[in-house]
Length: 320
Image (cartoon, rainbow, N blue to C red):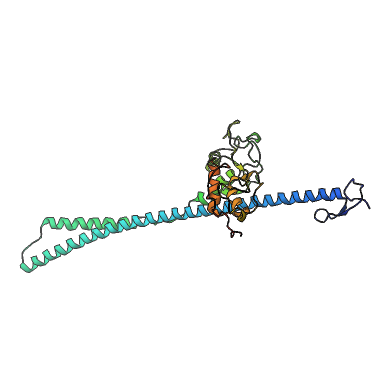
């Protein structure tokens, strides 16, 4: 019986269990195995990048919520302090008016008891002054509008990503950013991150495009970027720096606690690098951040000493 691979006349060797479930020759069995491993590896890489992007977006969402919460707390505290100061002034004024009133009542009582006037025109003017000021205060309080706390509309408003095709806001295929977006909608903060992480735009260019979209004053035909302007973040992709199986930036004795060393992963996105080090290599978070920070500052090289020789870098227990 011949090989069931299309166009092959060699004798069958075995069933291709992992790929096509056909009986094929030895040559095509090996070839199909390589294809299966290649497809499987690509799927793992894709899932790894997707998971990293999802984690990054979740972290960004957490940061935004914390910032928004702090902003609202600060605003409420300012309102409280202003109201408290106004009440304090009114109480001080009321105490002064009460003391004056008691004093004048005593003067009036003495005048009646002694059948002799102990009050003057000045005392009357003081009472009139306090009466007018109290009336003004009450009227002002009634006219003061009730403050309703509203979340700004632009916080919750969503915007459509326009980068679904070339020639939008002057962005062409020659700019080399991704122009295959599905036109999803994002809030203001996420829109900027979407331009940076998915379309690989420089942060300054991402903000310029975002502002043009949220202000809604420019059409997509407006040339926001020149033809020769560099808008792609050329330092967005990096190879994994863990290529030395005997030395990780000074640390030597605990390499065995890490996984997949040396690493062959290439062209990882910068936002996903810290998660790659943590999840794929099982590295401690503070250790991963230190490496990524050096990578960001362009100071990372094979001879750089970041850790002590006996420092424990992995999250797992040290192997004996």
